[in-house]
Length: 591
Image (tube, rainbow, N blue to C red; front, top):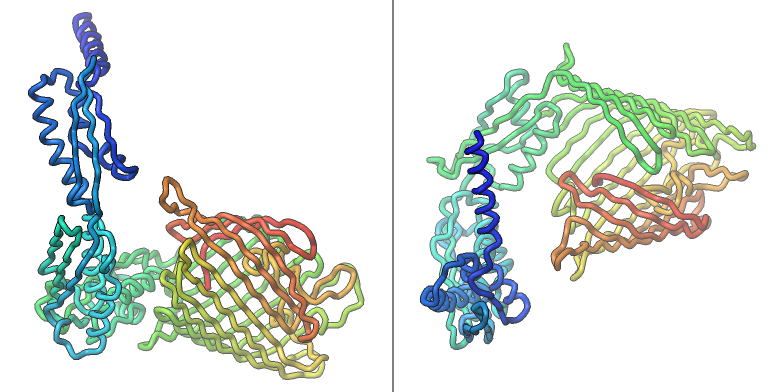
């Protein structure tokens, strides 16, 4: 035992002595900034410094090898005719100096992108568009500096664009980067072989036991004969996973399928439990802390519909809601019935509302449609007993028929950086309190992202109008108030509305909102991170008459984290009219 302990001590002392051995030589690299860092990090010479017993002959051999090593590293960055001088300076310890004059950097002088397979001669306009897109989006055009990493990246991106649609069996059949060191020009050649055009065949489902396999086909919406499209397959996976019926879904089309004109679509799912209870805790700067309880039944006995019942406990906006949803028909339309009761306390008025709704909706890749008949009733408490009419507060009930259409054309539906979305809501109905009055309601929303050289602009606009006689008691849930986290920052929750006296703010029949936000990635070490800085100006107005619309403005700044599940944002904004600062915290992207 004592001998073993002594051996361990001796080994530790030997290791410490070895670790403290001085390097065999010192190494200095003299080169322009980025190249200096590259050579210092990757030169083979660097790792031989720790070999302490190198003799002069071995060091001389390493110097010869280092010259070629340095030239190969410089070539990856586009420097094919550098002047490399490695000097050995004598002293107490040998010093090697690598002096580099990189010379002229090679640039792309010529690009030839060719195709073979179906895409080369197809008369289909879609194939021609795909060819043109690959050529247009090529990342190494004439005049661009040539580097090995950029060459590999450009080829990979071109291949991904080929595989994304029509041709999942595509490949690179030929590639060549011919660099003339004397002229510092690179001639690039790339040939993409698309293989055959792929069309979708029958859907084959595995992993389903509890539900009808037809449900998978109708949710996926990948019809036989459709041209292969990777984006549509991804959207189908998201629809299946987000339907509540399945915990996960994976769709695969085999690029080696024997019949490309009817390639089987393999769908593998993992079913969710028939019933599920979800508990949640959260916090918003508008409503404060909240707790939620949700019960989901995926197949109600007797009718086979989904039933989703939710209870939210919150100081300002508690509610209870149940929604029953039918299975999709062949075109993706689903019937739905909803009942909801809620309380809304803005600190001045307390609104109790009830809602019954029946209709049909359809959610596709980018477009949602919803048609429904709705009864709703609002009862408004006025704690300060200010003399107000039901028309002032929205104390009433109504029946309406409604149509809602939403189009999303973003590059990413959870965390977009470019594109736009537009939504239109149209409703017509009649009030039920006192003398019945017809009314019409319209809401239009638009959100767009515009890339800039440094960051992007987010532009937002929204307008709403309710047309009715002055004495009509339109329910407050059909009217407008705004202010808070996702509307006009710098103002409290629903602070912007129609002034009613004694500090009260009521709903209005007209609304206009606008926002301009500059988003810029925060950099670290010269590279963008997942965090962004924000500067924004929001404005909103609510009134009963056009002439009374007076914008309330909020300005502010904040930070956004582009998390894997969507943006998380914290901002501080100054409300110009109340002359107060408000903190705003939001999570996720919804349009």
